[in-house]
Length: 137
Image (cartoon, rainbow, N blue to C red):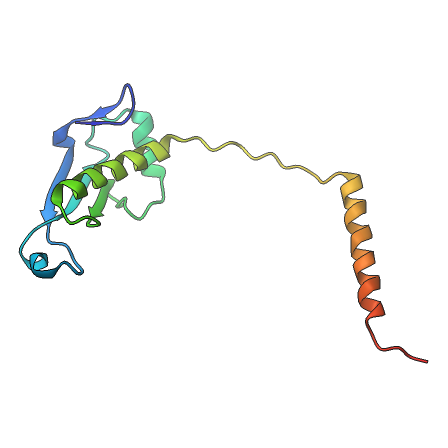
C-alpha cells in the first residue's frame, strides 16, 4: 500500500511492478539478475479521487501515455528492492506534483521612477560609448 496523503492511499493491486534486466554496466550480474523495476499505474482504473485523476490526465508528462497509464522505469540502484522503493517514491511525487495549484500571475507595470532610471542609465552608457570613439580634430 502506497500512502499519498493523509486521506489518499493506493492499494497494491493498483500498481503493477515488473522486474526486468537493467541496461548498462554491472559486471557479470547484468545479464543474469532482474534488478530494474518497470512500474505501471492506470489512472482511470485507480481508486484515486476524481480531482487527482483529472489533474494527472491533464499533465503533459512523457511518463503518462495517451491511455492514461503512468509508466516509470527505475534502474538506478543495484538491488531490486531499492529500485522498487525509488519507483514508488517517484510515482508518489508525480501524483503530488499534479495537485499543486500554480499561483495566478498578475501582470504589473514598472513604476514611472524605475522607467526614468532605466532611460537615464541608457543615455549615460550611450555617452560613455560615444566618448570611446575616434577623436576628430
